[in-house]
Structure formats: C-alpha cells, structure tokens
Image (tube, rainbow, N blue to C red; front, side, top):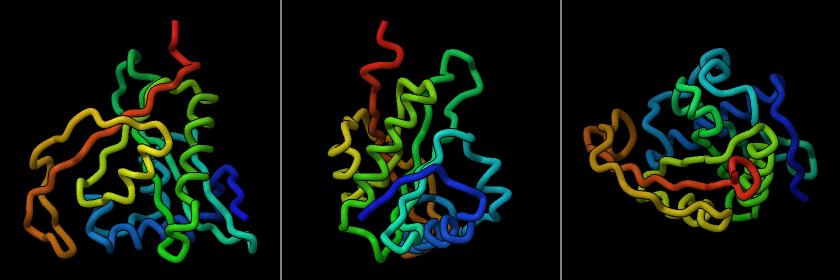
Length: 170
C-alpha cells in the first residue's frame, strides 16, 4: 500500500537520506553531498512537496518543485525533483508519487513542469514518460561531475516537460 501526503518538517531525516542515496548513484543530480535541511528547504518552493509512505508509515520517496525563473510570466512553470528510496524502487512508488505531485502542481497553479534527467537514468525517463512528460531536448555537456563514478566527466541533461490540460489553457 502506497500513501501520499504533504511533506512535513519531521520528514527531513528520511527525505535527506533518500536524497543521499540518489546522489550516491552518480546518475540523479550534480549535487555532491546531501545538504542540510535548512539549505534543502530554502532552495525549493513551498508547494507542492509530497512524500510517499509505506504500510508502516516510513517515507519511501519524495517530490518537490523548484522555480525556473523569478520573472512573473514563468510563475506557473516549475522544475520537479522526484526521488525514491533504493529499497522501494520498482514497486510503483515513483509512479504514485509523480502522479499525485502533478495533480498537486495543478492545484497550486502550475501549467508546466519540467524535469532534467541524466540520459543514463533510463528508469527516471520511463517514469516521467508514463506520467505524461514528453521529451523536449538535450542540453549537451551541461555540467561537469564532481563526484561518483563519472567524476571529471561532462554530463548531458535530457529535458522533459509535462503540460497541464486544466491550468493555463485559455
């Protein structure tokens, strides 16, 4: 059983532990170390922020939104981040979480959600496709890795976009 609810401050340790697992793969982010909760919290939008829970109420994944621009015309455009605990991967957690996240994004007024994914992270690409994201392009040599198995290598970032059918459809 997968339950989804709003992220709470008491979820911080679990959220950051899952983020650390993603960082350790070398295929989830350019980040090199798990940030403090204060830094994590300050760098994401207040809404939407969700966590998934297992039958024992343990956090198994999370999804948050970051802004893409301070310009008012982009107020309804955000960049998502979705992470699933290593022990919960392949069990439908990501799909349940991302589906609920997109509904919450619409409720918060977002009309477009983008995701930047390393091309090697085929599981994340498939997840996003299954939730209605479409490919929009690849930024070539977008950044240089500073950790993990690909340290020193330039990485491409594959971009995908989800578009609301309800918000911003004038």
